[in-house]
Structures are given as structure tokens and as C-alpha cells.
Amino acid sequence: MIHTTFATLAAMLLVGATEPPRIFIASDSTAQDYKADKAPQSGWGTMLRCWTPLAVENRAIGGRSTRSFIAEGRFDRIATDIRAGDTLLIQFGHNDADTKKMAERFTPIPDYITNLRRFVAMAREHGASPVIITPVTRRAFKDGHVPRSFPLYEDAAKQVAAETKTPLIDLSLLSRGWVERAGEDRSRGYYLHATAADNWPGFPKGVDDDVHFSKAGAEGVAALVAGGLKRTRLPVAATIRRRPSCG
Image (tube, rainbow, N blue to C red; front, top):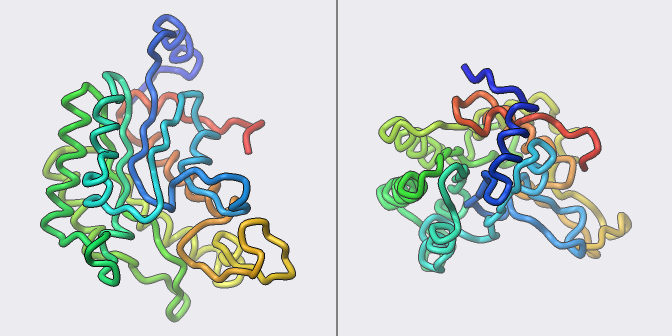
């Protein structure tokens, strides 16, 4: 149980203000930051900044799997920048499972497991704390329920977390429950659904997308991730508190 108060942690950060701890995110389009011209599309990594005073180094980028994230040198850039005391959030699976883009993205389960272990090991080698996050759900109802979107990758992430004794946020489970509780109609507002008449800057012709999030959806997923972080025994847990003026 962590007893460090938010105020105490803030004081601790001030003492070492030249290099305060940060949160790094390695992930895909569900978490990434977006420019204003893509509004209202948003990622949960953007909205996570509403839950902590720590700097969030959001390295998430659309279309990347564990394999392509590593192959493009993004893994190495995090390894160069991350330092002791930081936290690394690792969420992949959407693009690893994409068999339609085999050459660009697809990652077989054994390779996905190996890659997740590489992320965990890299963080620990630099004195940072890794956190594995299962892939966030798609919005897909069947008989009033949301089936598991990426069961094999979800299970593989849990396996790596257990084997490496890495904190796990089961975002797959949490987000399915969140979408189900909202129901088919209200949950549309969490994702990207609009017609041309809605005049969305990023989608002038309209959009029907049950994978990527609106601002409201990104806020909801960020709250789930923040809650998961608060339940860990990591130092970052003490920083988690909703900032009323954010968003």
C-alpha cells in the first residue's frame, strides 16, 4: 500500500526538479496525440495528462505494432531518453493482429511475447518501471455484450506480465465493461461517428469508426488507465488525481 500523499510527492519532485520522473507511452493510434486538424479524434495518452502532474512523453503513433515500433527505431529512441524513476506504459495488439497488412504490421503471438519482454527489460535496465496494458476494446456489440477484440494478444500480454512480474492494467476487460455499461447508442459518442453535416474538422465527409476515440472516448479510456495506475504499487500511483481544470 502506498501512503505517499500527492503533496508529499510534489515536494519530492521539487527537490529533484532538474530531472523529475515522467510517464512514457509506447503504443498505437488509440493512445497517440493528434493535431487540431484531426478534431475531435483524440487518444487516451493525451487525456492521461489530466490525471497526473508528471510530464507524459507520448510516443504512441498510429499504425504501429510491437514489431514495426521496434523496426522503425522508436523503441531505441525511448531507450535513449528514458531514465531511472520514469514509468513506461506499453499497449499494443491492434496492429499486431492485423493480418491484412502482414508485411507492415502483423506480429505472430510468439514474436509479440518476445517484443513485450524486450520493452519490459529495456525499462528495467534504465531503472524505469514498466506497465503492460492489454489492448483497448473495439466497439462491437453482440447480443448486448462486447466480445473480446483481441483475445490471443490480450492473453499473451497477461502471460508476459505474470512471467516478468510486471504490473498489468487489463484495459481490454475494463474498456469492454465501460462500453457495455454505456450501451450501443451512448457508446457511439465515445468513438468516431459523424456525417458530413456535423462539420468535424478532421472528417469533412463524415466517419464511422469503432476503433478510434472522440475526445469523450479518450477521456473515458484515460480514466480507466489512470485508475489502473493508481492500483499499482509503483511510485507513479501516488501522483494520480484528476485535475479539475484539465480537458
